[in-house]
Length: 363
Image (cartoon, rainbow, N blue to C red):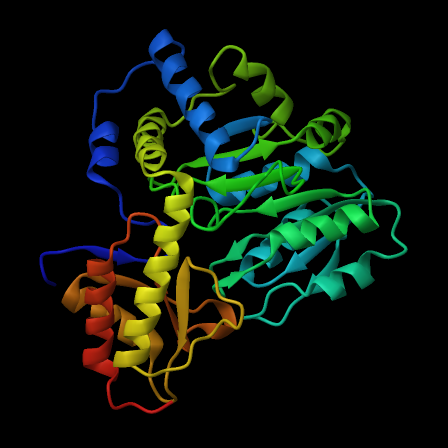
């Protein structure tokens, strides 16, 4: 392997030097004024990223933990819900429901396509008792972007249901306005657009979601939003947090603040355009998503190419990590990420490594 490590994966993503430095500092206790200041700064900056004046809760977990926290804090046994699925992570919301004995209705979309607003409206009609509708902002398994602003508006027009959004891979990559779009709960993780190591989950919780959490009856302990909300006043988490990762998150948020969120979104537009131009010029292979996000580009591999071996060879020989397809797409596509701290130079190296092995192959 060459002496380099380039990550073009959709989480975890590369870390800025300032984040690495912050995480390398000596550990300190979490029930101290020092941690309180750090915690308060992260929460304040996350409100800025989320575009919300509501509560932001922090938990030590993956993004999946944040997703699970929404289910257990918003729902009670027997609640009617709708999950709109556009890939693996919508299906994950369904699996979390089922783990708690719930039976959600599912509105599936063809993989590679976003949720159809008209289909959502038809599905919502005549369902006055619906408790919540669950969406993905972006889905890294397919590279799809959902029009959350429009979808949330339709939910409000047709139902009193809560709007719950998995933005684990979308936040700080694609535009998202928690308050302006009427989103009740938005979940994310630290290891993608937030440019930090894995280990932190966040939930932006609006007033309707907070009230629902007070009334929900599903079992919860580690992910109890009521305890997290109570701890905000003391500038701490209920349980021992991932202190070093919190320090890294504070450093990453300072970088995002300095850049400006609109510029962060523009940067991802530019990275996506750069990657797709290179991929088209050098490989000429079809893209997978019909409604693509700016977080990654899925590319359909030629018939007869072993995608698993291809990406393993690139990692071993070039030191470049590129994600393959998931479930039924395993070995059939690759997913080249361009989110967070990924640079144009990283993308160039990844596309060159692919081109050396694929040029001349026909789909």
